[in-house]
Every structure is written in structure tokens, then in C-alpha cells.
Amino acid sequence: MFDSEFMKKLEYLSLVSRRLFRGQLLAQKRTRQLGGGVEFADHQNYVPGDDLRYLDWNVYARLGNELIKRFEEEEDLHVYFFLDCSKSMSVGNPSKFDYARQLTAALAYIALADLDRISVVAFTNQIHNSFPLIRGKQHVLSLLRFLESLQTISKSTNISASINEFFHRKQRTGLAVILSDLFDPSGFQKAVDTLRYRHFEPNIIQIHDPTEASPTLLGDLQLRDLETNSLHNVTISENILKRYQQKFTDFLDSIKKYCVRNGCNYTISTTSIPFDEMILQMMRETGNIR
Image (cartoon, rainbow, N blue to C red):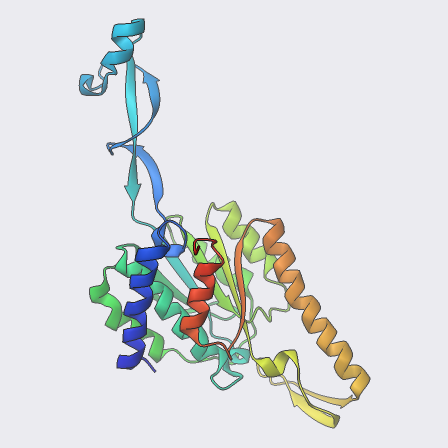
């Protein structure tokens, strides 16, 4: 799945990201805290015991005020990838699952190239596997081996339950990238609301197969739900097909509206778009290409 040609594309994407998109896409961000950095933040009143090296002597000379300089320091960013492994992700050629794994690998590589920390959480209605936090490109092969070892599981999707399980572990805040078709009977919104409440920055990547948006099925059919294995006898007419297509369009629109309303980054993609083109499209949507 991850051959030498794939690795070349990863390196190319990393170089493009570092050259053109600093400060915009995932790994090019930084979290900041007050500390001993070099970028001035603000002043605080001097109290006995403060380090006199940080006393603002210019202010003291002009105004007689004893103020201590405070500085910002940068921290490496933590990026958590939540990868949907439910059986509905197996649809398509390439499958949505393979496409999501490639996107995960590409975005994680960009983060690792910028010395940020990444982790991958494989979920359905619970967490099934996880890849621990790593830093540095030297770990990319172990990450790719982990992604290749994952398989889709015949479980229904429950993003909220998986996110809640994630928070049972002590985690530092950062970016949370959800890669899923979002076919969650309970909805994805509660999970993203939880991430926002916990001060994570959610990024939604919704992936679907073109046939899911515009199916060509007609007549009397028996359909099987991939995640529950339940069977449904249906009769599909042209009219029902149009109603389905409208509902699917409304579903995608609801994702956009929620993300825009709550200030979340989002990308909606079909598997027909090559993964590297999708990464570049995500970069363009930051508004950083002139």
C-alpha cells in the first residue's frame, strides 16, 4: 500500500508544505505558552523573588515602574488522527478505508517532518487500536506498518463513544483530525462538541465513494447493511433514487453548515480524487496560495 512512489509523494508534500504553507496546515502550527522564549508577550508587576534579568529597565528608567517582561515560547503540536475502521469504510475502489489511511499517512508525515507529535486512534463504536505519540520522520516506517496492519471491522460507527473513551486517557490538547464517512446513526456533532469543549481543535475529513452520492441501483433488491449485517428488501424507482440523492446532498450540506457555524476546519472528498491532490487542495483552502 505504501510503496516507494508513495514515499516520494510524501516527501514532496512535506517540502511544499514547509515552503508555502507555514502557519496554516496542521503541522505548521504551534501551541504557545508563557515561558522563557524570545518573543515578548506582556508585562507583569515585579514581586520579590522574580528574576531581575527580566526587569524592563527602560520602563523603570522612564516611569519608575517595576515590571517583569514575559515571553512566549513555542511547543511542538500534538496531532491526533481518528481513523474510522467501521465496515462501511470498505466500500469503493480504492476503498474509503485505504484512501483514509493514505491521507492519514500524508498528513502525519508532514507533521513529523516539522517535528510535531502525532498519534493515530483506530475506532468504530469504540477504540480498537492506537499508535502512540511519536516525533520525527525516523518513525514513519513504524507508522506505515501500523496503518497497513489495520482492517475494517463489522461494527457500527459511534464517534462520540470513541472520543469519550479517548478522554479516559490523559491527553494533551492539540489538533484532532477525524477521517470518516461520518455514517454515524447518532451523528458526529456531539463528538466534535466534546473535542471543542476540551479545547482541542477539530478537523473533519469526510470521505465518500462517488457511487454513494449517485447510485444507479433500480428495481427490487435485497440490501445488506455492512455494519450490522441486517437485510432490507427494497424497491428502488427513479423517484426514490432522486430523493436519496437529495438526502445525501443534504447530509453533506449539514456537515458544512455545522463546521462553518462552529469554526471547524473541514474537507469533503470522494475517493476519485488522488490523495496527494486532496492534500494540496486542503492547503489551497487555507488561502495561502497567491
